Length: 214
Length: 82
Image 1 (cartoon, one colour):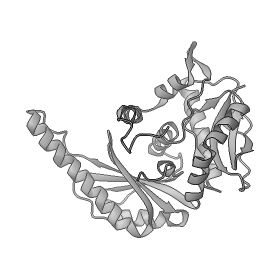
Image 2 (cartoon, chains in turn green, orange):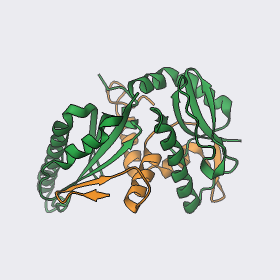
Image 3 (cartoon, helix red, strand yellow):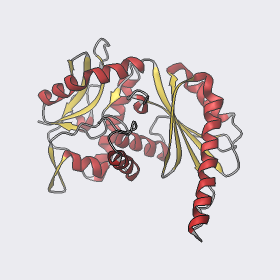
């Protein structure tokens, strides 16, 4: 029977997961290669929109519960493997990478800031005008991201940012005890007219699982 | 959800409003480790391999990011390791 994977933690940590997970299936765990992984046996994955949404939310609840007690490396929903052997093979193959991430992320959470502009889309009157408008638009978002980073610098353990189709997205790695402080710091910013900053979190630090590129 | 009136919105991690719900779905579908497994599951009566389902359930934003990373030459330092 296939396994739906939730997340991994360091094997030394003792975290009892919720008894039931997606589709009311029991949440089980297997520990190997210094990692403990939480999963459920899913006989038939219900993929109609309503069931998939309910399953995704239940998945989030399980991961959030574990994340409330320890740093986690979550799997993307829905990650399915054939059986425990396939899971343990994967854990062994990637154990060093996952353990390294879990050690680095101990006591850390990810806060996110999405920066969007209410300015009209770049003009399409001409190619040159479009590129000019787009450059200015991106500069505005980038400057706002820099302001957020500078303002929150004292609580940051890591920072990543990138452009998305919904604006500029910033990922801040902060200590668990610093999330309120981070929110207050962002809230204190003077946001330029026409920009909206949306702060969410705390989330598992998925953007920081891979160590910084050299 | 709290708005400070100066262009900053704070959203918690709970599923108590529609915005938070969308944020949660965005995270569970787009963030986390991906295993390129070989499981075949059925969606609407059609068998799909896991990778296919993953692509379907992944946002366009993430799919484009992965496609762009895959298109980078091997020596590029930002190439995805998985």
